[in-house]
Every structure is written in structure tokens, then in C-alpha cells.
Length: 440
Image (tube, rainbow, N blue to C red; front, side, top):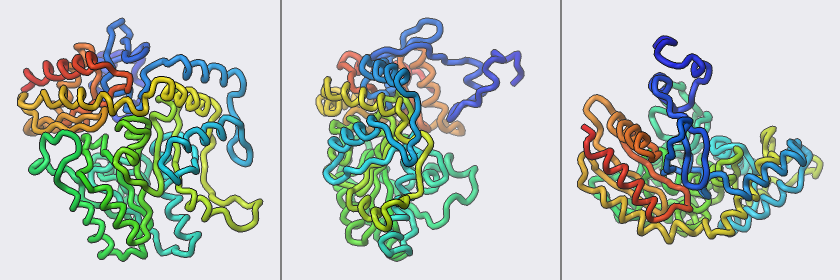
């Protein structure tokens, strides 16, 4: 590509997870957002079908969040988080602990889902060492799992394209089999009936490595970025039981499912399984200021609280942990969720969403449809020799017709803001259908 092919003002920015050359030849520029919509730089209105990037759960430019950020910026722009604190950090942690599953009442702040995962993995390793089981150093992820893009996250993650360029990654990591089983579960509405037995794959890894070497298992309750994979009925319960039997910590990555996506504040509550740690980000501030968190069982936290009181218990943290603007945004976000009942609204919209999505069955190239709460996936058969191209063509067509979707491989992912109406669900699905029908 030469500078004649595109605006040279676009050159400097190397865009993340983007086909940079394609984008810069035909940019898709967003200039403004409010409620359920974006507006492009040329004034077109775009219905947001993916909550920004799985994060704008309350919709865009919500007044309480905007006001909280503005006020905090004028009051105090930054406070160091090491050996110092500020009131909103403690207030936000306390409010978050009221939403988490029972016992997960200790909150460690990060700046992203990737950092939350790194933090939780380090906590798991350090926890076992502090309690005298330093041999537990092995981490278990899952094939097709996504846990961010730092070295720990891609090591326990199982998406090939995210791993293959970056060498040997962390040592001492193994993976469970993934749960995607279209032969038995295609077009399931809600949780698939088959696949609880796939959790028994952990027993295979225990037998291979011995439980005394395994620190933690990390999985997404619903795997989002790999194509919206819904947990089979009984799978998460079985995984919890096996971890308990062998003294292994269970970490749920709820960066996507946290803050109302499944009809409860956290998917662990929806599915009735309490992990030892939850990683979160995205919806914690409605995407307005970068922030993440790890929610930790009090017993794990308390294990670290030993030795002389003046010594640091856990040598980990970030310059921007509990950043004042992020904490203010988080408090404004939680207030907005509470005012409008958004953390449970997905449960009332789930049937409408499921009916609309599964109405796409029978369209050309649609090989599976998956849904739970307000998250959905429409899997297309890959075009021979061009994996991902068919779904990308649908993405471009939808954007041209005023709806923003997301694709991962040949799966169309939908995760609209929790404020969505039934009419807007219809608009998204009808636009997707119109884009799928002519695609070759």
C-alpha cells in the first residue's frame, strides 16, 4: 500500500486486532455516541449491537457516569495507589463486594481484563506458596479460551492466532478440551444439553501432572471472543466439584459476562457456581475509563495477611490501580445500573433475543446459533480457502446499513447494551439477516 491509497494522517496509528491495510483504505470512523447509538464522522447513525466491545452495558454517554468523571477530574486527577489511598477506591470496592457471589468480598483493582487475568494467576501461585504448597505451579486453561493478550493470558488461553507468533509462552501450562460440540448441540436455545462430561477432562490432567502440581484452573463461564460458546448444562458445576476434590483454585474470567450480561450481576450467580476468584473489567465502568478488578475469596486474601504488619503482603500492582477517574466512573456506573435495574434486565429480554436470533436458522451458510442472556453467536460456514472472510463481509454490510456487529472467525457475535428494546433487537437481527442472504 502506498500513501496514495489512503489518507496519510492514518499512518502513525498501528491499530489493535484490526486489518490495518483494509481499514485505512476504507475507514470506519465513529465520532459521537449516545444511548444505543454511535454516529459516524459523516453523520450516519449506527445501532450498537456489541456494547462497544462487550463493555458499554448501560449504553453510551450516561449522565451519572459523565458527571462523575467530570467532577473527579476537577477535584483530583491522580492519587498514588502504593502506600496511599483515596476515598472513592474504598467506596467502589465496598459497593462491588455487595454484588459479587458470597465470600468474594476482597477487590484488587487493575486497568483491564488482561491485567485482571495476570493478577489472578499470580495470586493463585502466591497463595499456594504462602500456605506451604509451593509445588502447585501449574496453570490450566481451556482450548478456545480467551484471557486477554499478556503472556499469562495467552498462555492459559487457547486461541491459536493469539498464541502462534509469540514463542513458547509460560511453562507449566496445560489445557482442557473446549466445549464446542456442534454435532450434538447445534442450534441449542440457552445452555446445550450435552457436554457436562467434558469437565472430566480435568481428571485426565490431574492424573497426568498430579494434583499437587496444579495451582488453578481458569475458564470463561461463557467463552465470548472465541465465538460465543455456552457452557453445557452441569459442566461448570462438575468443574467446581473436581477442583474442590483436588485442592485446585477455580478462576472465572467474567470480563465479558460480568455486570449483567447473563441476567445477574455475574454469570457465576446465574449458573449457581461460586469460583475462588473472578476477573472483571469492561462493564465495571461501562467502558468509559479503563479499569479492571479481581474479586477474591476472603479466605485467600486472609492467607496473605501474615508476618510483620509493616511489610507488603503481595508484591503486585499498577501505577493506575484504583485511578480516581476510573473509581468515579465505576461509582457512576453502579448507580446507573441500580437506578434502571440493568444488572437483571437481560433475564427479561432473553426470550425476545433468543427468538429473534434463532429466527435466522435456515439462512444460507448458517451452521449454528448460540445464545444466553443478552449474548449471541451466529456461526457461518467458512468460505473455502478464506476463513473469516464470509463473516467479515457480513460485518461490513451491516455497518453500511446502520448496525455495528462483531465477528470472530466466521462467527457473528452480538452483545448489545442492556438498555436495548425489543424493536432494536429486531433491527439488529433483520440487518444481519439481510446481510447474510446475498453473501456467497
